[in-house]
Image (cartoon, rainbow, N blue to C red; front, side, top):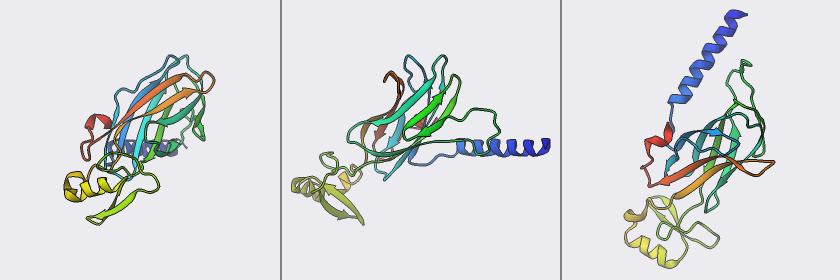
Amino acid sequence: MKAKSIVFFLLALAASFLAATYRWGDSAHSIGLIRTSGGEARHPAFLGSGEDSYTLIATATVVPPYRGDVRVVLEGEPVMDHRISLSGPIVDLGIRRNPELRGNIIRGLQPMDRIALWVEMKPPPIDPICGMSYTDGFLEVSYAGRPYYFCSEACAEAFSKDPDRYKNNDGARGKYTVAFYDTKTGRPVLNVPVLFTGKGDAKDAGHH
């Protein structure tokens, strides 16, 4: 039995190491602290624009004396479709508690709990000329085998005059926040800034 436990531990350690060192081109990792008085991530998460979807991995430790339920929301404009999931251990050795996620609420956090939250984001199409987010009635124009969307004929015409200049401007941009709120008081206990930069310009700092 002891040998079996050691094997499971080594497998879990190897899997954790591989997960920590592997990095997707459309993902970022941020580390923070959940505090009663409010916490901030160690640094913003930087993501390059121009992708169809993104993944943010936010790891956090609960600082005493905080305990309670936490609601997690993605804030920012335009509203972005997203899905939140809580990562559990690949092999549960029973060493740590595993908080439960119901909907967008993490239940029963206790001091010194550690969580790994995955936020999968799917931004709406953006007009590459004016930056307006997609709505019904947008014009669709194909260029280099892919669609682009425009709020007006004027924007579509401006794009057609110099498409290479604007072809990478249709992705997510600006600042969002993954916000953690205590469900009883409504007060923020952690904020993770998410910054969308130019295509291919995501800063390495957002992955540490």
